[in-house]
Image (cartoon, rainbow, N blue to C red):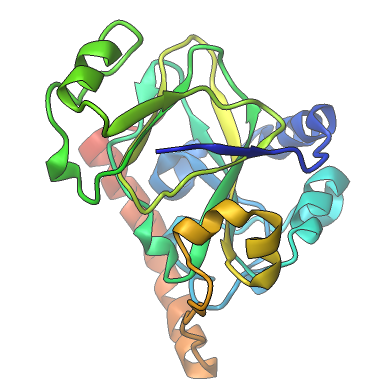
Length: 248
């Protein structure tokens, strides 16, 4: 349930400026689940999830945005994802885990634009079914009663723009943005190699020393099949909007 913060020298003002330019004219409804935009090119991502829905679409814009490129290059590990994620005003993610990222992979985020009212709720639960009390519609007014119903199992955190944050996303969590402004965060999944473990030692609780990442590396035929299957991603996005509503 702990959130660990690191100052990696990310230039917040430059990241905010480049993010505004990247998303100018971008229709978030086109991205995965209506809130994602992958910044890397497909070839810059680990082949395991290169063409997955979560990385749809890969914009390949890092070459035109040096501050974002510097963050990418400064992370000396293979990337499974490197995305901007948007949470619209007055909304929250469904309770979830991020185990899709794969074995031996850890997630980090750097908030770039954030409303002061936004907060993360982290838990030590392995499944959503373990949550107790009124877990839907959380805000500052209702959090305390929810926390009491889950005593010792949940924690609320405010994430600081410009700092890198790590917490175990294989556990159930959500992000609530109850304010009037949008929230955009830079989220990335890294293969937990020796450099990651040394630079961010808290990840050892999720990926202990001696646990070697075993992400599959599909060959040419597997990659070709995954790339061909990606044409279904826009259909999945439209279905998601039909079932859950499109972002504002």
